[in-house]
Figure 1 (cartoon, rainbow, N blue to C red):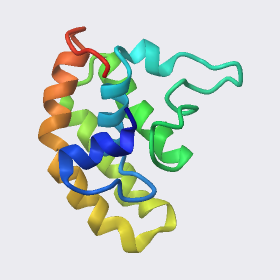
Figure 2: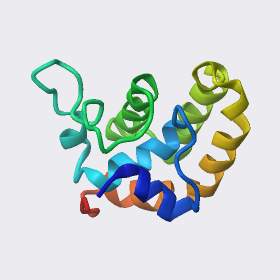
Figure 3: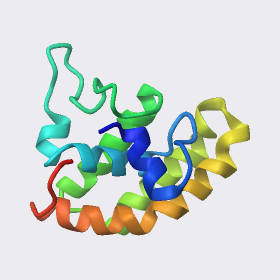
Figure 4: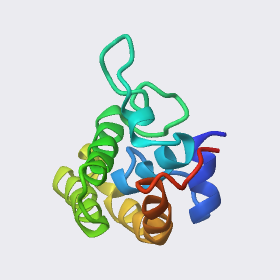
Length: 130
């Protein structure tokens, strides 16, 4: 399955470019069974999720999603993870795509409940990749 389709199924919209980290984190969790799998280094040195064409979004935003998930892997609560993803999106003004900031913020709000549900299981080893 493609991450863009996952996001479209969950929010009713295609991913807003360059990709809110919270939204991209949901796609990563749906496509990888564990954080270790998503963060496994490729032969090029970056994480599997970053090199995965199924994860929509610009590379720096996918990397921000992986960093958001890393917080959870290190024991941070969901609120902290959501705050970091939101701060990245707002502070970076969508990587210069400022006209996309409101739409990306709205998409993240739509998917937050899914993020909480999936992450709650994923970090406890209960979620399965698609």
